[in-house]
Amino acid sequence: MRGLEDLIDTDDPGIRLVRDWAGAKGGNASVILPPDAAVRGETLLRLQVTTRSILGAVAYDTGGISVADGRLRLLGSGPARSLRACNDAAGGMRTGALDDFLLIADDMLGGLYALNGGRFGREGLGDVFHLAADQLLWSHLEVDYADFASWCLTGDLGLFYEGLAGLDVFQRPPSFEKTYAFYPFLWTREAEERAPDVRLVDADEGVRLRLEMAGFGLG
Image 1: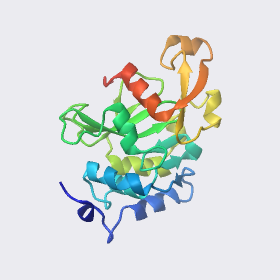
Image 2 (image 1 turned 180 degrees about the vertical axis):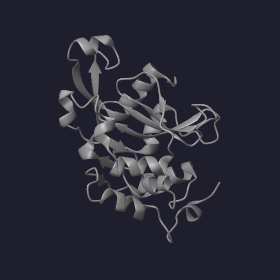
Image 3 (image 1 turned 45 degrees about the vertical axis):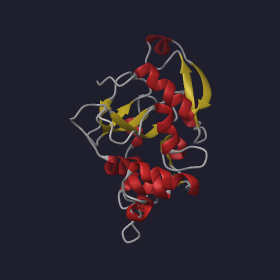
Image 4 (image 1 turned 30 degrees about the vertical axis):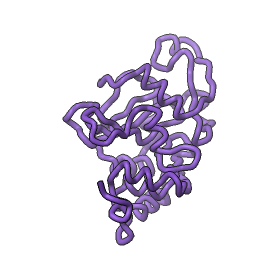
């Protein structure tokens, strides 16, 4: 197991590229939150990736990234919400486990993004999988973490979320630590027939409950 001195890259840190993406003209109104010193070191040790990588940079050098005014959230090492705590709640980030996964982001509606460490099968190891807020099956996005982060900060989120943008709450993003919960659930026929009731819940608890309901089935 490598120590922090081996994982922190001061010569070519990935955070430079992340900041370029976040500040790109015509990007997605992204805000890089400050990391918590007590969280980021342990997170990087558990990940065992260097800060030259984009995953290591976001995990160590940010407290998360709020994208599109908070509609999408990349997890980092924040004091109130972190990559480590979210995965602890959901059962991910178990380095070396054959069925491992790593939750890397979520959205304000309950959609999840995870890196495949074996949970989604051997095909697509290291790629990002997506569980949309209105679906019960995960889809393979066929990109790695770096390409995913770049897309979050600079890509066309409007087209990706087009089917959910009509929800009343879509124009009212919550804080980084909260997410919306809907009843009837967005993937049900009942939710298509009437406007669902909406409430704010703790984001990590929302992730855990979503995984209990949806599991890891693939579309």
